[in-house]
Image: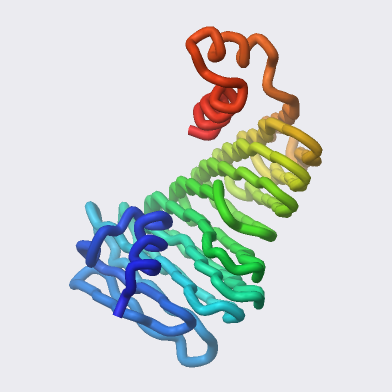
Amino acid sequence: MIDQIEKNLLKEIADLHGIPEGAYNIRKNGETESRAVNANVTIETKTDKPGIDIYVKAGTTKQSIHIPVIISKSGLEEVVYNDFYIGEGADVVIIAGCGIHNSGACASKHDGIHTFYLEKNAKVTYVEKHYGDGEGTGEKIMNPQTILYLGENAHLEMNTTQIKGVDSTDRITKAVLETGASVVVSEKIMTHGKQYARTEFQVDLNGEGSSAHVVSRSVAKDQSMQIFDSLINGNARCAGHTECDAIVMDDAKVSAIPRINANNVEAALVHEAVIGKIAGEQLIKFMTLGLSEKEAEEQIVSGFLK
């Protein structure tokens, strides 16, 4: 049974207010809580390690697949492996994410390794949110790892969000693209207190006409620390762009390391990094509307992370 705390976690990470339509797998405190499949989507429990295999039939469209993870038990630590096999020409939405409620003194931790195999012309929109709450002193730790293998003309759009309650995270995304394949990554992170967040992207553009667009937007407050490390390898005629935009506040620290390697004369690659504080004129503009300085900062940060 899902209690009220766990229902709130599902709402925060997957916008679920009840049982989702379509195929789904809800993981709770290290075990499968509930599951549903259909004629086009099959979900199977792995036999050699924790996790599931998700199979989407070729040509499947207009399907959403929910695979959220919730942890409400203090001190629980797990590593989960989920593999996605997306058939040729399929076009689906996959909604993942992890929510941890920790009311105890021991750390709760979830490491999720998601591997995607997209066949020719397959398309995936992948949404992943991370959220933590609870009145306990135990840390809430999440280390997501996403590995993407995109076949000919495949496309994956990945939207990741972490804006509250995660004490420590090490986020790794790796992608290998074949001919005509494309990937678009949008990451949003906010840290506060003494939280730590590290993001690593590595994209190998191996195929002719492949492309990547990787953008990270982040806000670091208080004494928190963030590291952004991105690498795009252009190994063929391709196009790649990696960008980090960060707002730093209080005594926080942000390090940005965008890198590009052109290993082919026709690789067109661009990298950008911008780190700065909230501009004074922005604060003044909002404060003239009757907001306090704190309220003005909150409005600016909210707009920046949209």
